[in-house]
Length: 347
Image 1 (cartoon, rainbow, N blue to C red):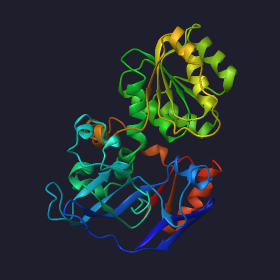
Image 2: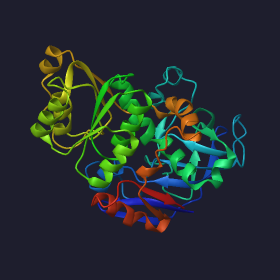
Image 3: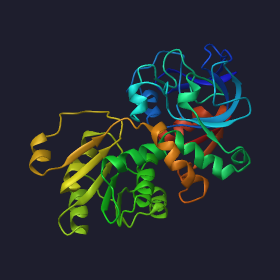
Image 4: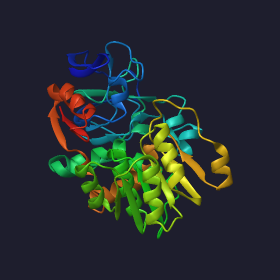
């Protein structure tokens, strides 16, 4: 089959690789119908996170089961499924607690020795604990299928940030980051009943999506100016809940600066770049809670899926560029150059 591999920074290729096959009784092989490029993939692309030459890449996909191992109970050939960005056994204590990202037998797509999502097919370990079945009819609805792909990462990650930030009905929420995760954080905040949602971003196409998703205010400033703008909008107090979806030291400082005393920050931006640390005394003195981390999206899919299926929420607008598998390298260049928000891949 063909799959996307990374050889060096800025060197993404689509190459012939061995076909995936069932290796363990709990495996299935999924033929990929939709995949995408994630903002976090760019850290490997830019050389900011290490990869072995020839390593697979891509961790978001949905598709059709082609083959199932003898130990798989919940899936069979022909089933339409979505995969969260981490596989998990579904039986350990962490999985039972809804923290599948800490499963001792779990792992990330594209890690050394595993298939990546940006390919024609994927071997899925622990299928019963990992995959979620989708209605077969969704395969013929292009927009719905694209929206369902967001369940593999960005929608659940935005939701994780909103939950960590304690978004509740009637609250004021601020979202730091205008990428796909930040925009899905806006969508999640609206779904959870936020009364006011302040989106921080300066790219018109992205802030327009934020408004569609439920943002009531847009702040284009950055740094201290952004803090001042949000505080002005909130009568000097700041937001009850802050979603941090960037991962830099500056974005976290902004998040702390715009949080209301007694509020909370839900952080899901993958940490990268310089970091001299945050002054914990600021969080302590202002009673600001900090919660978040790697989103256990497998735990959230059953809750979010019905709302995507019935149109209550539609995350599909975050995918603004579509490519075939051969177009994946150009998709990386587009996202790296910020001429694309999130690239959809149709193998």
